[in-house]
Image (cartoon, rainbow, N blue to C red; front, side):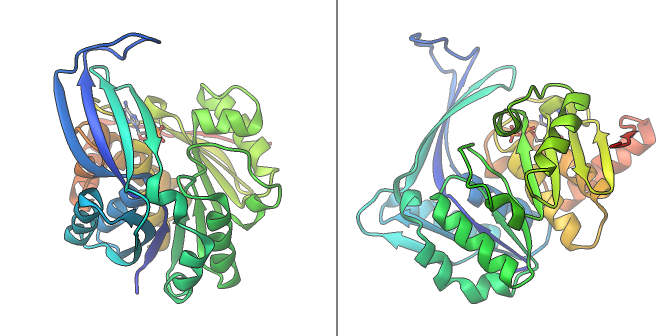
Length: 319
Ligand code: ADP
């Protein structure tokens, strides 16, 4: 049993830190290198668990040393890995990540075994999913697998959270079985075909995306915070001011914390604040799973910002 089940990817992240990102065709010398467990799915499961909720993972790794390290890292974090299969043919997924000193990054993913996380893997975990309070899925595994997971959750009235990353074209009816669609500026702009760079353009984009079928839409805007669009209206929550050094997994931190907040009965505004605090803290540390915050750290940032008036609300109606 797990409060929140994540169906998604597990990757080994190979992270190089550089003064500035290379331009096309250019080679730059890294001044720091780290190999660390990652993958959007696994990161989001750890983000959930670190906040004290129980988390389960459905996915696939290879029968290699990376796979072993990823499984033991999840287990050490307390994530239930009973439904992570081991593929005898394909290697474990890998992500090549380059991080500039300003915190910006580029990421190339080799899916490996994640590409063979198939609908049957999800069906085998059907009772695990149907007993959870929420399901989280992304797009680093095959689309049919994501669809199957969302359907199982919807049939069992489980809250569904979908993070369409990395973005690809989606079947028209898919979004109608999503309760919360959470996406960043790049994904939102690709989905709605409109610019998403400021909170007000993001709320407009959120409105358009809402018309595509999801129950509610959350757009994360990096250092500009996040916006919400739903039947109850739209609003912007500014980011917390932090010294960002690596934005890897900021979105995963946001999604994990937002989902935990909602499962615990908080409202969407509080959920967004939780998400923003979690994302902000994740940017202050290197790596993916290593950077994900605990509940005490989030509470501390929320309390601190209240004291210093670091964050103010900027509510906007969705007429
Ligand atoms: P992704 O990693 O998917 O691109 P974002 O970059 O939008 O996601 O980050 C997710 C959330 O993390 C944002 O909504 C924001 O609240 C927080 N965040 C990201 N970057 C920063 C930053 N530089 N300063 C403060 N908060 C940040």
